[in-house]
Image 1 (cartoon, one colour):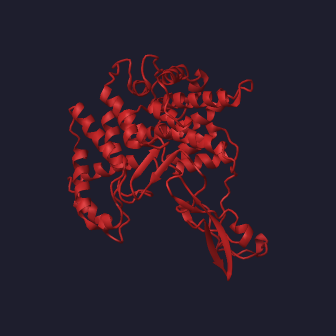
Image 2 (cartoon, helix red, strand yellow):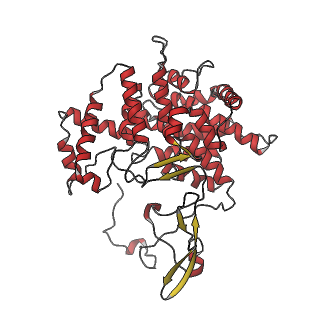
Image 3 (cartoon, one colour):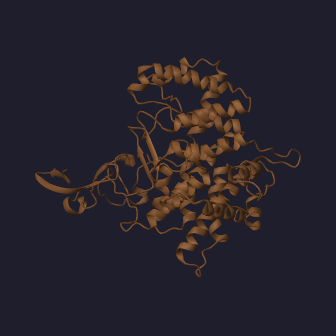
Amino acid sequence: MDKTARLIIDGTTYELPVITGTEGDRAIDVSKLREKAGIITFDPGFANTGVCRSSITFLDGEQGILRHRGIPIEQLAEHSTFVETSYLLIEGDLPTKDVLENISELLNEHSLVHEDMLDFFEHYPPRSHPMGILSSMVNTLRAFYPELRERDREEEMRLTFTRLLSKLRTLAAASYRISRGHRVVYPRHDLKYCANFLNMMFDSPVKPYVIHPDVARALEVFWILHADHEQNCSTAAVRLVGSAGANVYAAVSAGISALWGRFHGGANQAVVEMLQEIYNEGGDVQPFIDRAKAKNDPYRLMGFGHRIYKTYDPRVPIMEKTCDRLLASLKRQDPLLDIAQRLREAAEKDPYFSDHGLYVNVDFYAGIVLRAIGIPLEMFPVMFAIGRLPGWISQWKESLDDPQRKLYRPRQVYTGLFERNYVPIDERGKKMREWA
C-alpha cells in the first residue's frame, strides 16, 4: 500500500506521509506542507481535516458505525450504565464489579456542591438560560476545588474527573431550579446516578417526586448515546482550550458554551419545536416537506441529516425503541410522536431526501423521550451536556498525554484590503457605517 501522497504545486512535487488508522481510515499528513512549500490547505469547518490521533471513539458515517473503545454503541445501550460507560471512555476499559461499586460511592461522596457557590448562583437573574448558568458554574468549580499539590498527578486527575461527573449532574439540576426561582434540591446518597438527577430536578416539598424505573433507564440510554461522538464542535472546543494548557474545568465550560449553539446541542429542542409547529398547523406534514424541498425557502426539517452520518445513524433505532418503550410504560400518548412517525414515513418515500442523504438522526426521537420524562425545552441542551461530559473528559485527558500535542492555531486565507496608509480623522469621508 502506498504510504506517500504526492502533491504537485507549480511543477514541484512534494511527498507527504499517509497515516493509516486501526480501522483502515487514511489521512494525508500536511503538518510540514507550509514549511516545505509555503502553502496551506483550505478546509472550511474542518470537514476533511484530522486534528489528532485518538483511541477513544470510532465513527464511520458511511457504514453507520459508532464504537467506544471498540465496543459497539448498541451493546453499551443494551447492557451498560452511564457510569460504566463513562469509566470506559475515560480509563479505556470496562470496570470490574469492585471498581464500579467504588466509583458509585465516590460519585455520591462528591455530589454536594459548596454552599457559598450555590448562594452565589441563586442570585442569578430570573429566567437566565440554564446553559449559561451551567457553563459559569463549571468554570467556578476551579476556584472552590483547586488542585492539591501533595497528590500525585494521576490521583488528582481521577479525583477531578469524579468531581466533574458527580457535580455537573448536581449543577445541572441546580441551574434549572435557579432559572425558575426555586430552591436547590440536594442529592440523596440512596439513589443511583440517573435517579438522583431526576429527584434533584423535580422533587418538591408539596409534591414529592416518585422515581419511575423506566424513566430513569430511558434517561440513562439517552446519556449513553450522547457520551462521545468523536471530534464534533463541542469536543473540538474542549481540545482547543485544553491545547492552551487550560484546566479541565475551563475546557469543559467551553464545551458547554459550544453545545449551547442551536446547530449543535440545540437540535433535539428544535425537533420538538418543529413537531409542535406542525401540530399547531393541523398536523399535515406535507406542506413542511414541500417547504424543505423548495430551493428558495430556507426552511429545514429538523432531525434529518447529519454532518457525519450519510446513510444511517446507529443511535436512531435505539432511541426509537427507548421512546416506544417509555411511552408504553407510562401509558402515555404523545401526538407529537404520531406526527414524527408520519413525517419520517413521508420523507423516506420521497427520493429527494435519500438523494440528499437526509435520513433521520438521533435528535428526531431524543426530544420526544426528554419531553416524556418531563424535561422542559430549555433544559434539553443541558441534558446533552451531562451525557457528553465523559467524552469531553476523555478527549481532554487524551490530548494532555499526546506526545504530538500542540497549541491549536488554524491558518487563514486573507481576503482583505492591501496595505494602505492611516487617514487623519478630518480627511476621512462621511460614508462610514455608524455603529448602532
